[in-house]
Length: 496
Image 1 (cartoon, rainbow, N blue to C red):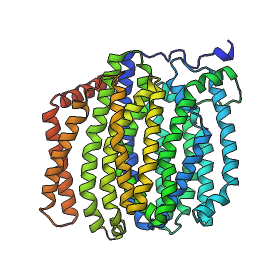
Image 2: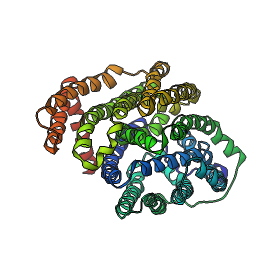
Image 3: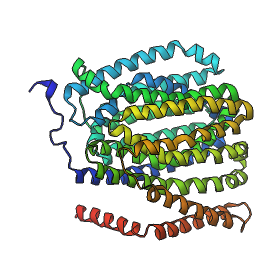
Image 4: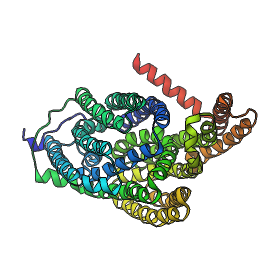
């Protein structure tokens, strides 16, 4: 058979029922994976913020942003294009993508090394920070080598296999960085952790999804991938300029300690998104892509995915804002982060808005409406570069946080655009979780006054919050327990 038309998996065509089943199963698997990974990351960050100074944390934050900026040029939307593609990718398409991406990464590495001195002088980095930058650059090569096996798993929605290297890599990274930071290695802790976890993650990926890399190039295959890949990557560029580019600018405005405090606030405010939303997005992009010709089924799945995200993110943000001041007070080495508490509260609003709008832009991408996503990204990028620097110069750390939130309020434009293609029940998907979270917040705030700031108070607040939220959400969504029960029984029957 001609290599240009050889199908990698002739049985890949999935029915609507299989897609929905695997999507639900995948969301559950990835959520479980993230609970484990974020649990590990939570404790790792708790130790790191005790062992590292705000300046050291800020250096890692800035250097990571530089790496993310350069990473854009190592990909032109290859992976998303292969995932979104309706037809099964051919062998020549996979090898063409692999070849092109490795070439781009090698060019990127050379450019990164050539501009090291400029980056070092711009951000006053010492030699240890330079080594970290080089390690992060090299990690791009390791990540690019995993692209094709990862794409094959995502297209088949086999996230039960996809999570294995992710979990192992996360464990290795966090154990390494914490142990070395505890031993006093500072920034070097990140350097060793990035390299060790990257190598192990690459090895495990190819064990889970075997694929024989090969060098090949087909202009026809390359153009077919670029049709979706380039617009997608332009959006990625805008997102990178909006987020990481702004961090680089604020690094000069706020200084290393100021950007460290902002980084701490952003890290925690966006933690619920990374904890829950990213898992759903990872599953829904290929699932939505497969359902792009069925509006009714697509609308139903989009509504359910937003509900699931808001159901978990909204109460997490409320609990975070109420607990953070107490934890900073009762943990001696955390008092240094108290100046960032207001920023944390404000950025939590941005995080809540993103829980709604990110699935919407993900839907637009999945159904091929990439031009609309581009217009939204242009709007958000322009607004970010207007409001955030202006507010940061005028009001410092808290001004920067307020600037991000002002930009976030414009996200409601996405609701109007998506409504033309997908019918979403916002009352159910966002209204009910929001009401339940507000009522939970009132109960937790009341419980906070019963005891002084101590661990018993924290435990009581978590218990009151969990119980009150579940009670309210069950009253508002009485079918939810039955739905979970039926899904559980269905999984048990399949195992039997």
